[in-house]
Amino acid sequence: MNLANQTADPPSGVFFVNFNQDCTSLAVGSKAGYKLFSLSSFDRLEKIYENATEDICIVERLFSSSLVAVVSLSSPRKLKVCHFRKGTEICNYSYSNTILAVKLNRARLVVCLEESLYIHNIRDMKVLHTIRDTPPNLAGLCTLSINSDNCYLAYPGSNTIGEVQIFDAINLQAKTMIPAHDSPLAALAFSPNGTKVATASEKGTVIRVFHVNDGTKLFEFRRGVKRCVSISSLAFSMDSMFLCCSSNTETVHIFKLEEPKETPRQAPEESQSWMGYLTKAVSASANYLPSQVTDVFNQGRAFASVHLPFHGLKNVCAITVTHKVPKLLVASADGYLYVYNLDVTEGGDCTLLKQHRLDGKLDEVDSPPFSSVGSGSGEAQATATASVQTVQNTESEKYHEMIAATESPPKGGGPFRLDDDTEFPPVTQRTD
Image 1 (tube, helix red, strand yellow):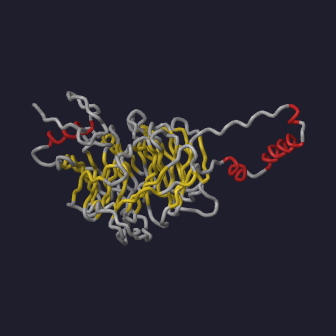
Image 2 (cartoon, one colour; image 1 turned 60 degrees about the horizontal axis):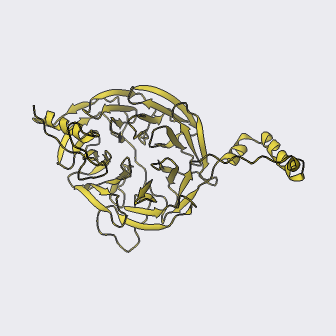
Image 3 (cartoon, helix red, strand yellow; image 1 turned 120 degrees about the vertical axis):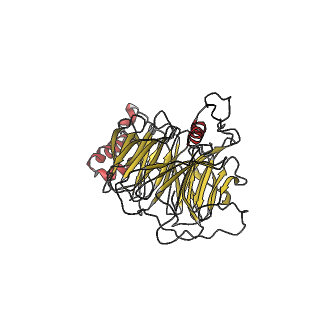
């Protein structure tokens, strides 16, 4: 999530923060460079890597690999793809407009500009397809499924209503358009297997979940009714059973994705009683109520919630499991990562377990500074054309590193564990 804006730097100095695809690590971009942290243990925030060369406003890591895509504030139109363990730059691409978001999985890398999207083959970074003349998308809102088999890209189909355009990033063709909300979209998220997409609008009161194949609405959750809010992020748990939603308020909502239990059938004698008559009367009267009222009756409520020690700050949330214990994570513009428990059986209020500084320094006992941070926006749009610039003399070797970093498992290599940062990816050398 981009935390920077055009008028002022975040007080914490954190420009960007995001979890990787399977929530095993955290990437932080700042004026002092970028850092990668392991989330294998929450007793402390273990730093995997630090680069202090540029002011980084976007940094995305490919799962637990050594592949990172970075964009700096000083060169907001240039994307660099790096092998961070070797300290090498594999390639860089330049665009004629500001890069607002970068999304990647093991098959594709997507670059989002204000009015266009570039889809690259992640193995060689060739541009496979360009989606031009998209509706103005100042926030760079888009999401890419982490599943390479259901490799879908979702982005706003309109800037006036909440249409979601689903694009097949493997076959390079539009799949479906989902009329999700009356108001423009504010947040999007795919389930880990890529079969569901969650949506929220700028109004921020209702969260909906749709089936990707045909756009069928599967779930509808009521986030609130008292006020409109700015949704910061949506995220599924890795088992797709839970969906978390954070905003500029102090509350994070966790919804449980389960079908409502069927109402038990009434016995004949019960249906003739006053209670049976009253039940029928209420059910029948619902048909005469405005659709907005009946929709509220049918919407699910939060299964669990978190009360943050701040409000008015941009943040990103995630649900993860460590040592078989579910937790909710919130990384905020105040420069802290908050770790909460999550009772997947009872739900209710989640309690704060740990909080860690995102600058990598030792955690302080004092409370973190809480202050408002505005949202960012890109430069004026232009019809973008990408031009590739590779580092001189070692082009073929560095593209070979790209293949090695994304191979799962790597060809010609022995077995390795995807969750082991020291083993993945094994870098091979060219023999020709």
